[in-house]
Image 1: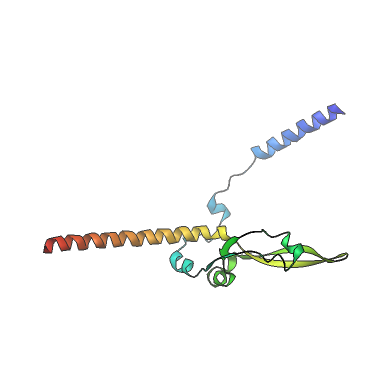
Image 2: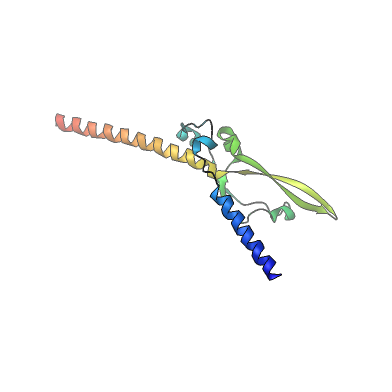
Length: 148
C-alpha cells in the first residue's frame, strides 16, 4: 500500500512539474483589449458620496450571518451608479426562510478596489494643476519683485 502511495505521489509531482514547465506567460496586450488611459478622474471622483454605515442585522438574522459587522466605509450606491455603474455587483445569498425552506437574498455591493486607477488618475490630474499653479505663483512673485 505504501509503495502505491509513494509512486502515485511521485507521478502527481511529475505531472505538476510538467504542467508548470509548459505554462505560458501572457502579456497585457494578449489578455486585454480596448486599453485606454483613464481620464477625467477628478470629475468622476467628485460625483462620489462617501458614507459610513452598518448593516441592519435586525432586518434579516440569517442574511446578517453573511454580512460584515461593525462600521463600514463605502460610497452611496446612487452616486456610484451615476459615474461607475459597472462597479456595482449583486451577490446572492441562500438563507433559510422557514422550516425546510430557503430563499435567495440579493445584496448590491460596490467593488471599491476598481476605483484605485481612477483615484490615481485624479491625483495625477491634481498634481499637474498644482505644478501649473506653482509656476503661476513664481511668475507673479518675479513680476512683483520687478515692480518693487
